[in-house]
Length: 111
Image 1: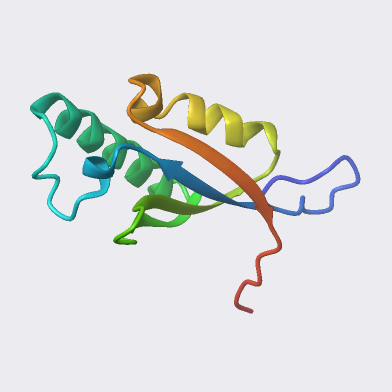
Image 2: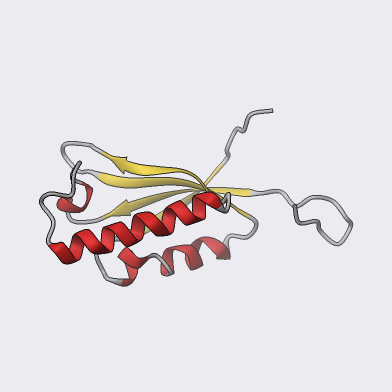
């Protein structure tokens, strides 16, 4: 855990990320996607899983709203600037297959 200049633990910040993409990107089996889109989405999933292993992404996945599917993630960071960096480094965002917006969240955590 990182401490501030007074030696106190820094409060973690939580955000909700909402990803938008062509409907095919969030189809249950990615069957409606081109091979390129499928490869990009697989790199996106690997990227987010790595962030999950690092403890940054707490939970993520597609929301299968039949009218308008989208991706959702809840993340935990130390600084707001980290959120934009994480989004900018996402392979699906870099490829233009996905856009993401984020909002601060007042997370209620266990314990």
